[in-house]
Amino acid sequence: MMEDKNFGTVGSLWSWTMQNLPPKAPYFLHENKENFKIYGVGFIEMPCGVKIKSRLQVNDLKFEIGQLMELKTSTLKKPNGETLPTFEFGVKKG
Image 1: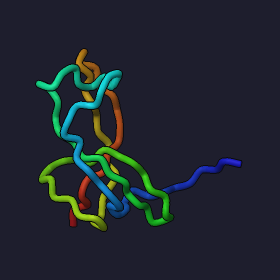
Image 2: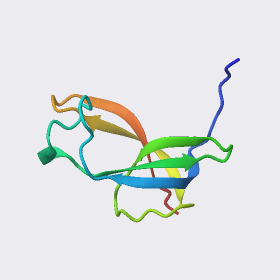
Image 3: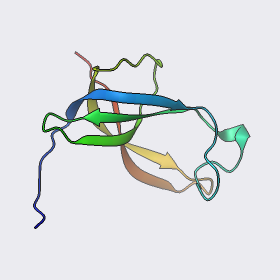
C-alpha cells in the first residue's frame, strides 16, 4: 500500500558529479552544444534515509559530500521558449 510521506526540504549531499556534455537525444532542453550549460547532478540523502537524484544549482561549483542541501523550485527553458517547472537542490545558506 502506498502512502504520502513528507521527506522535508533539507538533506545532505551523498554523491555528485558535473554534467559537462549535452545529453544525447531525445533529451530536448539543449538543441546543440553551443547553448548547453554545465549543471550538477547529485543524490541528496534526506533525514528519513531516502536518497533523491536531482539537478544541483551550480553557483560556485564547490560541492562537498555531506554538505547540507535545500530543495528549491526552478524552471527549465525548452528551445521553443516554453518553460517547465521543476525542482533542484542548492547549497543551504546559513
